[in-house]
Length: 179
Image (cartoon, rainbow, N blue to C red; front, side):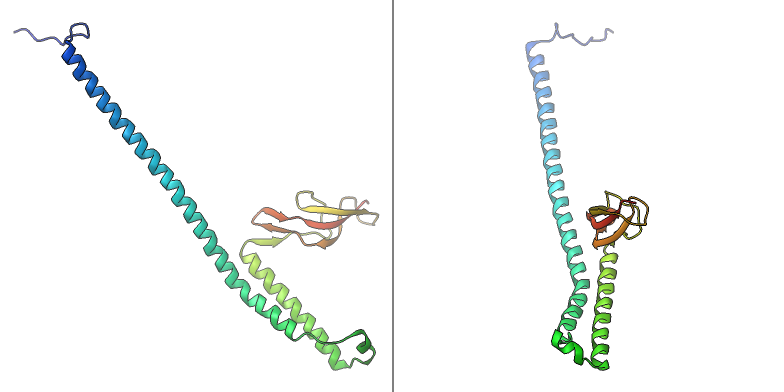
């Protein structure tokens, strides 16, 4: 018994070649459709992820705002109870007046602490300044002055600087020692 040998391309008939070409074209169409579907799925996934990131940011922002409302309310209450005095009143202030003023400013310091705690929970932290070595990544020098401190040491803070996680979002404005 003689085995039928597979014809080479030269021996294939035109009909066989056309059939094979049709099969290759069909496989190519299926592959192209699959590639197009995958590209569309990937684009949809990117859009969905961007939408979810935006939603997460909004939820996180709303959660932070909810934590800030009590701080705002405390500032509002403090402003409503601010001691009403003028320069003309200074010579006539009583001990009770001075206690009210002291208590008012103590309350403001407590609100400031409350604000820093809420923002700290959100990942915001104040950049250390006074007595620290000047770091241009964290500090913005507004002046260089003679002092008893070593050169490049922060003498004083003019405006607070802030980091969110480890990213500086506002450098601290500082006075720096010349040495």
